[in-house]
Image (cartoon, rainbow, N blue to C red; front, side, top):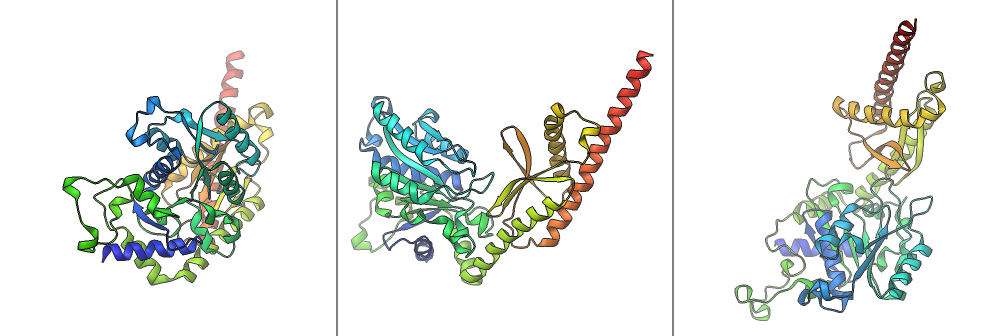
Length: 391
């Protein structure tokens, strides 16, 4: 029964991403393991040197490409595969934090000319900091031209394909060879519930299946069917597919579509109230359900010089982040762009509503004002001491 449920679940996901019946996947402990599994299959399929049977030291370096905004698990996967972090090419992104296609092509050509072997490109469908989506269709065409494996890390964002507001942003994801995504993020499932999906599951089986005396089975005679341990590194596996399947059955596709769309609209609404508030600055326009901003009190020039303002704002917003987290009502996170420290929200909770966002901004304003006022008072006291000392 467990195998049947997991099979049906991933057949549904395959259809969602525009794939055929040859596609299948499996649940994993987290996106780090899911990305590792996908890239292990990519290495086996594209490497052509059968690295599982050869020494890495004697092989031509295999090169992996991702954006400079991709998740750290991509580099970790390369390290775990024995390729080394230095084989990961971090491709420059544009002003919208999407990988530049011309820079990708340049890097591939540069490696080929150097005698290296490019083997995979990773596109991100919803970056961790800003929620941006790489140009997946163009990436797929480049991968096809150079015969590279195309993997999409959609841990956070890819489930937004269910939303009518965001579906078109994922054009080209159907051309990927593998996709990873986390239902414990934007399908609101409890931890842990991560998935890896392969357009052709036989490629995963070729990468992981091992025949040995203690695991021998005659599949035709026993009619055991699918064995998910043949598709990934885990032999002992929990039944996390059940809670994903159960939630989808209980609520339905349309309910998920509406709720994910609501999260996206809430992020846009939050951006509007941030812009309307005199003590806050919208630093990056919202992407999907992520919004980045910072506390920037009025009349800063009265107590801080222009040269020191950015440093002060970074310090102030770091203190504001920590104080808000300790408050316990909300738990914002952070992002950083070119040395600018920002506050970040990512709405992936089905119970979040507009009233919560208003309360959140009010709390930030209150704590921010207290922190800023404390700085002004301390600065005035210090200046007074200096005057007395000078006198």
